[in-house]
Image 1: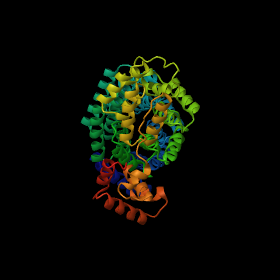
Image 2: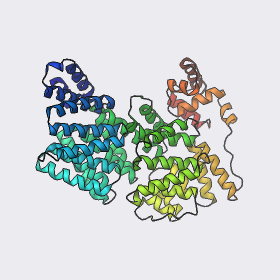
Image 3: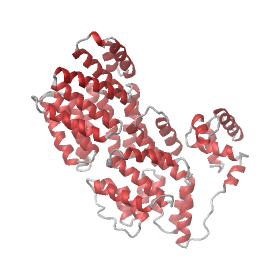
Image 4: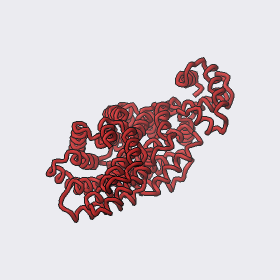
Length: 517
């Protein structure tokens, strides 16, 4: 146990979990309090490294022991931990149930640090469900009690919730609360709280389209998680990073990062979700037939709880699919309506409102004040202003979507951008829209046979090249094409040789430069 605690302190959480496992093999001779403490320590370390099922099992055993001992504070704290772990495996109903039970039990005892943390946990759950008033009310209870008890760890956890929710009411104050939360966590070596603060700081800036600030938080946060062995938060932030790279047009890099997360079968559903969003958008825009399984996994996650932060990106992805003529338009509009009905403020649903306009141009955009600038401008009919904003922050795909609302010259520029990004289905759809609006002499784009013949690649080698471009490993390519890994090795070698490249990245660059991709 001493080794486990020291390993945890210095950020070696896999080692810490291992030490607790060894100790638990010999714990039968300990009193029940000692056994419960070991199970709690094991649960905490497991959840930090992404072993949430093991964390749930260990925390459940700790709760049973504390209950048998009649220790209300410890049992209540176990319920609060179970609430957190249930949320991480995507079981929102269980998270809410455990969270409420924790507060109800702890309120029967004098004020305690455990009660303050239980309030903060409910505040966090409310924040994640976009219930802003409830977040701030419970957060204020947690902050007040934490300050009275001199518990900076609980204070920074509560400030994180308050800041993340407060961004929609007072952006500057929300930012300050999050910055204070991060500062306290780093100063106190509260590693999990610091990782969560980095994550929410990045997501707040992403919501406001401050991409440079978001990138800085992600770089610092991911490095912090790598240094301190915080796999759960590292991989969640990597998914957000993939979304940022996607927005900046760096699609290959986005695919590589998202695949690193999703291809790890041990990664929990919650942690996978940001990467799934990035992959779904990539595959739809590139015309990859393997988009279906990604969308199915996103929907399965939503079946357990329709949180707006998951529902909104899913609705946007389904709207994009419907716009391309590959999905159910009525279902996409229903999802947009559902997301808007759950939104506490119009600022949250700017992107969805623009997708509704694409799917139903004559529909009323509703209240647009408070939305991010490019969404507000586009819905107000200022496509030039919206396109200029996206150009300033280097978001080519969104810029092209704005240009589509413009004149013939703007539409031709949009088509060129989509072609350059490799968004072939989008480019083909845009050609159809331009023809419908009377535009003539539209470039067809390079034919598949022409692209293939440029380097003498076979059809199968082209398929392998396209999957390399998407960031697939050889193992993943083999599974995707239903061929052996050895055959994939031969194809990859042939592709590199024909493109005169020494690496996969160089092959992709050469293929783009020559028009193959």
